[in-house]
Amino acid sequence: AHYIARAGTPDGARAQDVLQWYDWLVLPNVGLVHQFVQHHPADEENSFELHAKLLQFLAELFNFTHCPFRADQLFVDFYINAHYLQFVKLYNNPDIDARQHMLLRMHLRILLGFAMHQSKASRLKFYQLQVMDFLVREVNAE
Image (cartoon, rainbow, N blue to C red):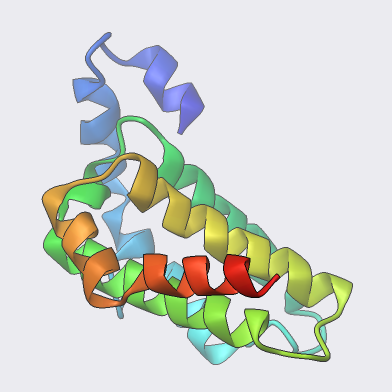
C-alpha cells in the first residue's frame, strides 16, 4: 500500500483507484483473504504463518491513509464485527499462547485502522458493539 501511495498523486486519488482493483482480495464474505481465513483456522497445522501474514496485510491495508474500503458500509460492518469478535475470543482465552497473542494484536491493529481513520459508519459500529465500554471495563479490572 505504501508503494502505491508513492506512485500516486499527492491527494491519494491514484492510490485509491489502484486499491479498488484489488477489492476481490478483501470483499466481505467472498474475498480471497476471508475465504482462506474462514476455511483454514490459525490453529491448523501449516496455516498459522499464512493466517498471520493475511491479518498483517489487512492491518496494513486498513491503516493505510488512502484506503478506500474504510468508508464503505459493507466493509465497516463486516470487518469491525469479525475482528472485534476474534479479538474478544482471544482476549478471554485463559490459555492463550504467544502465537495467539500475536493474532490478538493483529485483530486489534485492524480495528485501530477503522478507529483512527474514523468515519460516521465506523463510529456507529464501534458504538453498537460497545467496544469502548468493553475496553474501559477491562482497563479498570486490571
